[in-house]
Amino acid sequence: MKKKKQLWQVYILKCNDGTLYAGVTTDLTRRVAEHNTSALGARYTSGRRPVELVYARSFPNRSAASKEESRIKKLSRGEKLKFISG
Picture 1 (cartoon, rainbow, N blue to C red):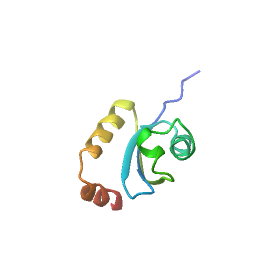
Picture 2 (spheres, one colour):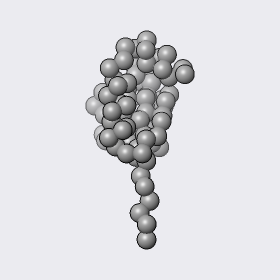
Picture 3 (cartoon, rainbow, N blue to C red):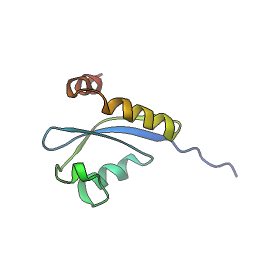
Picture 4 (cartoon, rainbow, N blue to C red):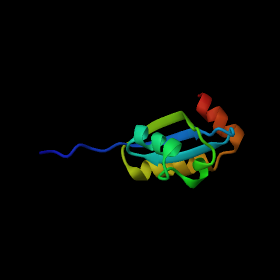
């Protein structure tokens, strides 16, 4: 039986205070719910709930997703907003 290839997703959340948070996951629905409701969400977002998903993109592997996450995190707020809007 062939193993299903797992896609990794890079996502950006807009927090309740207007700040932006970027991360990677293999299960976007679960991860956004964790950021909003549980202790499993990032420490950064736990005090800034609720969060809203504003961007997501799939990558074939964790390495590619992590590189894109790192690139996004280096952008200024203005650059991130421009990036999100397309």
